[in-house]
Length: 200
Image (tube, rainbow, N blue to C red; front, side):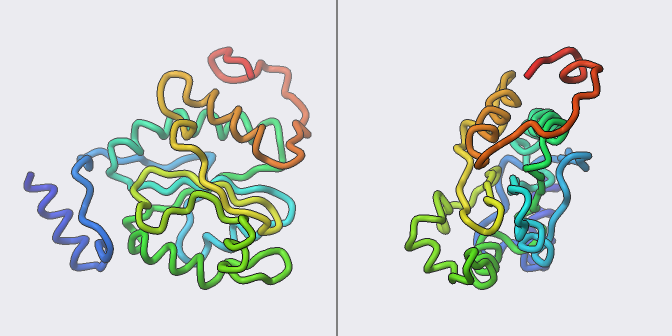
């Protein structure tokens, strides 16, 4: 309880809770660093996704969010496999509470993200190229797919972001199906599909 009060006070002081209260499911543990997801900030998020050669999978998380901690092993496992087999996808993470909350993130995307021909965010949304970005509910954890060339932003269905003992398999399947012209274009190492002998 004392930790939650201190975290909440610190967040309020830093402006982190501009649009929502500190989640109740936070704890003293941490999501921790990832070998497979690049850590992004307000400045680097759109630079990272503004890529003409690879789609971007972006996780919105909070370091002390218990659900995010639960998901990390499966998300890392899926990302590791995809990165081993294809150059068409890259992975990033954005700590929603560290960088000002949902309102700040949405404002940044709406102001700076443009379509492949310079279309504004509103114009791309009107075309149906922004799918599932719920401005009123960006509660973490969430995951988004930014298609290469700024062609589309779509939310990864919540049930496919890594939940459960088969979570990594579900996430890999969704990515392979959703990335346009997905190809396994990297040479296999010959040491097995994954650590622990897991296939596919």
